[in-house]
Amino acid sequence: MSTPARAWHAELAWLPGSGVRPDVLIEASGDRFTAVTPDVPAADVPDGLRAGLVRLPGLTLPGLANAHSHAFHRALRGATQVGLGTFWTWRERMYQVASGLDPDSYLALARAVYAEMALAGVTCVGEFHYLHHQPGGVPFQDPNEMSRALIEAAAQAGIRITLLDTCYLAGGLGADGAPLPLEGTQLRFGDGDGEAWAARAERLGADEHGLLGPLARVGAAIHSVRAVPLGQMHPVVAWAQRYGAPLHAHVSEQRAENEACLAAYRRTPTEVLYDAGVLGPRATAVHATHLVGRDVDLLGGSRTYACLCPTTEADLADGIGPARELAGAGCPLTLGSDSQAVIDLFEEARRVELGERLATGQRGHFRAGELARAATTDGHASLGWPDAGEIAAGAIADLVTVGLDSPRLAGATRTTALASVVFAASAADVRNVVVGGRDLVADGRHLLIDDVPGALAAAIRPLLGN
Ligand SMILES: [Zn+2]
Image 1 (tube, rainbow, N blue to C red):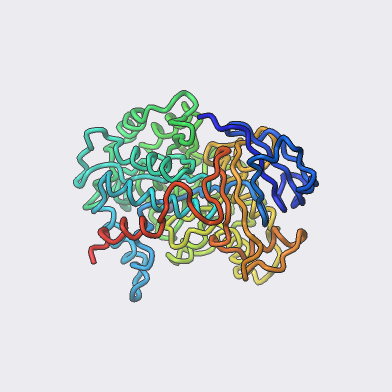
Image 2 (image 1 turned 45 degrees about the vertical axis):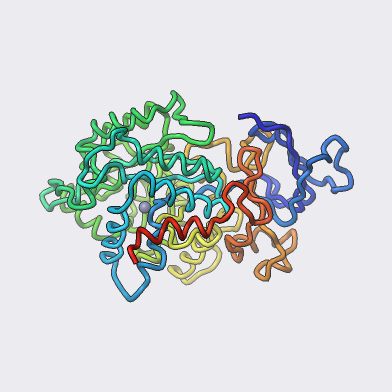
């Protein structure tokens, strides 16, 4: 795809190594930044760049990476908050929605959800995808039809996607370590065994670098130690290795998972994943909420990413994970909207610090810059886009601009702008989004999809059946 040379003038921009700088002239050619120059007042922009120059009032950040998403859970927002309910009533409702989706309805839903993400400043999504087959587990004619619907949805919404093709084989772990069979809606998730999963994933047709298109790449996922027996993990690990692809897994989200895993294997979920060769610098442990000291050492020592999803972890009453310990041990942190309880990476970012404060009774665990890094640089790297997530010459040209003139942010200065955005912005404060050198959101309006709320409502209402 060829995009002509472009230039933007940011009132303030957060730049790697030098923090928030004023009057930043940002130039791009094709999908890459070619020059980033701070301290260029608008009046001094060279004549050759004035035509088509886009002014960006507010604070400009690199594109945000949503490192953990299940797009279809967006249909549950609100529906699972009516009345009281438990984790299990939430899961029942989630299965109901999953049972009603086909490639067309999932394309419509995911397109609208990814457009909502774009409006929130998300330029790259890691889609942890396990709804592979028809009801009863019968493959579609193209067994990757649901995956292709998601890739198409991201393309239509204008954002990058890493399709984390998820292996999901069992309905849980029996006390003797034997996997429980899939039941009901879960049958749609299963490929039979690890080798069959790898054979289907191979048919996605990624190139040798794992790319499926200019804005799409593959990754792999092991749903959890509950859903993939230890003996079936190897084909997933080997497939990810061959493509140099990201490899994600849910880890210790609920205490019950730890108990079942200890009973079955006499090891924690983290130990099982370590022994299976899953952990490492291309791997991400999602949640990592209920860990023991040795788990933290294994995750940190292997440089595994830890993806925190604090709004979901609060919504599902999972708990507060040891974010500071994980970061201190060597895990880069990333953020995800997971169940889409809300789609707002500023909210996810600040909750990492605020959760730590509530858990410890002390303030001051993460600086705003560390939280912003989780939402940008490290999030992209964990999804296989190490050259995105920074505003620097040579990097992929993705930008997000947050207006500082809303009631929430008015009064922010250059010194406080980044902390104000991380600790007080909402997704609604995002004004402009650029993906691969092209404008995607301008003045809060999605340029490819006119009516995002209308698209969401039209996709969701039929799925709720009332
Ligand atoms: Zn998840």
